[in-house]
Length: 100
Image 1: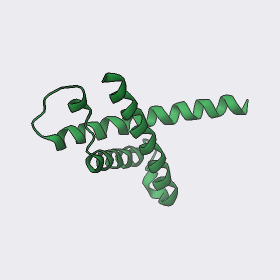
Image 2 (image 1 turned 90 degrees about the vertical axis):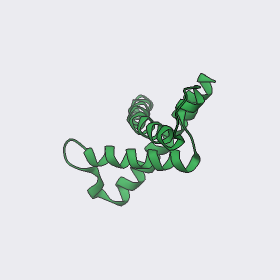
Image 3 (image 1 turned 180 degrees about the vertical axis):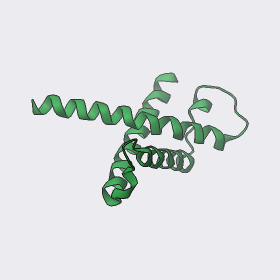
């Protein structure tokens, strides 16, 4: 159950990363300033929307009772939006190793 939940979170984080990069490419003003808050906010919004529309909530999958499913989905969306940065860093590292 835990492995399935983690693989779901990883897959959703990958999807959020791809969608966030596509949005940033289409709308350069989304990138934000030096702190890149625009990217983080965009990733969070995309993650939350993805979790709500797919009805994915990690707390429920881990047998943690929560009274509102949508709250579980929002929490999961925020988690995968932060995981998108980790996926991006991993992809960049793998790409750099491939180029060298």
